[in-house]
Amino acid sequence: MVRAAKSDDYQNYTDVLSKLIVSRVNEIIGLQVHFERKK
Image 1: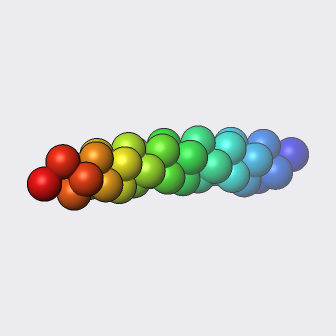
Image 2: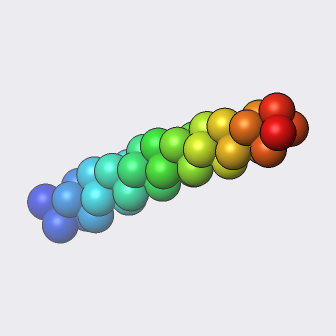
């Protein structure tokens, strides 16, 4: 039981982490595109 709960927590953690990373990367790409258009 404990092991299963731990793996679920780990899965949730990695899901949240990957979502944060993806949104951050999208932000950076969006900013770069914005600056490229300004030139």
